[in-house]
Amino acid sequence: MMDLRELYQEIILDHGRHPRNLRAIAEPTHKAQGHNPLCGDRVTIYLSVENGRIADLSFEGRGCAISTAAASLMTEVLKGKSVKEARALFAAFHRRVTGAACEVLLGPEADEAMPPSLAEAMARLEPLFGVKAYPARIKCATLSWHALDAALKDGAAGRLVKTE
Image 1 (cartoon, one colour):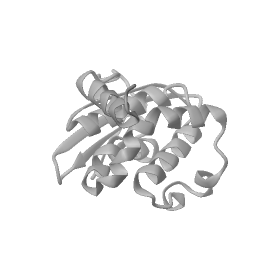
Image 2: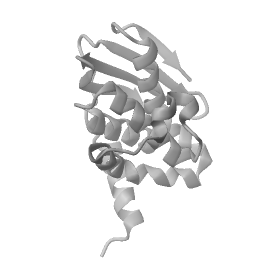
Image 3: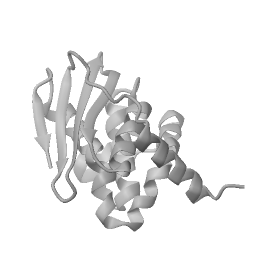
Image 4: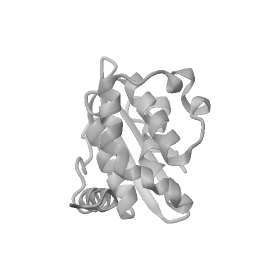
């Protein structure tokens, strides 16, 4: 039987080699770029938000397997979620990979009990939680999430914002 670490490594490698939603959205409602100057990873996040829900989400960029896998997994778990749910997932994900309190990032809703649909999404992100043991790789795993946060905060109407 496959060790859990091996399974997680396979999921990361699969998403790193065959990323899902790797494309630009023609007319996004929100857009942001992220750059990690320490390793050179770059990502552009595209969102189409309709009635407070993420109707479509994609990314373009280049980076290591962890950075690419994190962006790919993020796009899969957030499609169809509300903006509030996306922010709650970012907070929970950030907390799991860094151990840091996320209330500073997203407010007190970060500590609310997670509904089953969000707990299920978090379970899909679990292969990335191992980066906590490798501090230099945490930025790789969170780059796309920080770009998503910037897009939701400042990238309305497709206006490009940048985060590092």
